Length: 143
Image 1 (tube, rainbow, N blue to C red):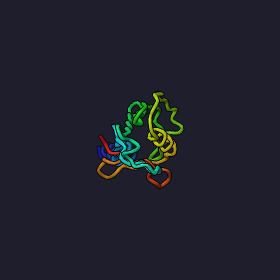
Image 2 (cartoon, helix red, strand yellow; image 1 turned 120 degrees about the vertical axis):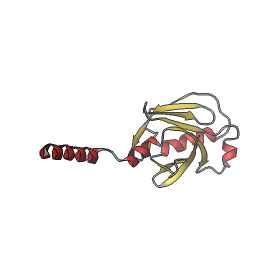
Image 3 (tube, one colour; image 1 turned 120 degrees about the horizontal axis):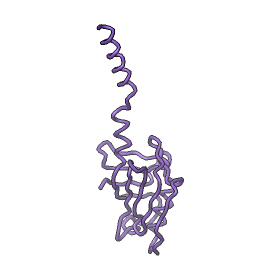
Image 4 (tube, rainbow, N blue to C red; image 1 turned 180 degrees about the vertical axis):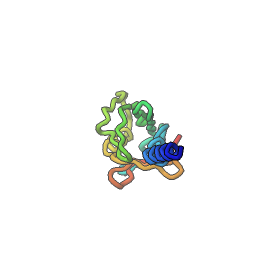
């Protein structure tokens, strides 16, 4: 009887050691949902000048392994490429609608998104930073 209890206890502890930690699961799943852009680096034009009518949005569907959004003018979508905190939109086989757009906002957004290779999410899960290396290129707020 003691051997059976010992064996069950040993299996339980081995199972718990192999289980992913809550924080690693929580980190990836916190990407899920829709985010609205509130900062983009680079252009000399003010943020509100780039996006006077509509701010870009980015949505992640971790179940389907896809992302989609609106760059203030056109809809875009693609396959999500995430590995830990590494993320790539450049290799995502992105598709996009082709409406004519005024201003530089769409071009700035698309070009910046292609440079992104990492992401971070704030402790409270409300802010998503898309980065090139360790430089925050875009910042989004959770909708």
